[in-house]
Length: 404
Image (cartoon, rainbow, N blue to C red):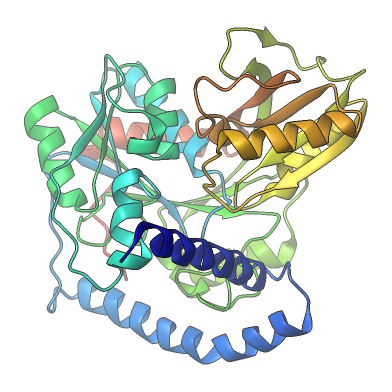
């Protein structure tokens, strides 16, 4: 297949992906989107049967077998696709464990990394995937990959967590064994690992976005659920993220309906400072108070980020959204920044995740910053400390858990 034809097919695939994203998040309310939504419903039922069967078989070790690794395995994940704020939670736990003297390794699939995109590209979609060895993003002392090769989240974690090993690879059993043998890891954190059942976890942290817990309650491809809501029962702890307001009573009742014992911890993502992209300047949170601001992002749930910047700025003059994990090209950045400047914006702000996807040599026509966010526990701090202690002293706390 020629390069031009392959590029055209990839663009067509990306355009369709954007349309589907609008349907499953119920952002696109057009007639065509609604009709396509109806078309997707039967496939959601089929996907639900497959997911339930897979979990059932793993729970009983029929056909599918768990692998137990020789260290503590902490699973961090969610029931939905994207948008719950996993990365800051993983970062917070990794820092806590390192501060208590543990050697920590984070295992990630490396979603949307260069290797992942090659395997998932339209031209390779029906070919057998190659088996790659685990890739070390950070050995705990230095970064060994850029964001394109590692993927957004692994690169961010490696950059922000000195002393923590970060490894990517589809086969996280292999990655886990490699981390134990090569780096003598005491604890493994499976980033976005709730659906990764080949490794037997000792503690499951399930993140639920309080502002949009389960979407329209349909499974993929009609909704945002990866698993049925009833699989809340597999959680050891439930983290309600984006909990700026009191949780809806129906949400708490839903959690307790399916999980009587898991502790519920509420947390928020707090802005800390603004950092210049491709620069060294750091600004305080009052930086935007008198400014005309433009924002752009390519994340699953852009509204929360946009609202934060809107509250912190003098006036929001420009806004642009891209698909989740969008990798920016210089030409489109130039066009976007010129539009923002023409609209009156004198500074642009993006997310930290987006910042790592901007070319390192890019020089914008108006200043560009990302906002640094960190997790803050607002309810259930003692339960959070208990979870950390359960990892550091597992014999006193957690028993291995089954996916049932």
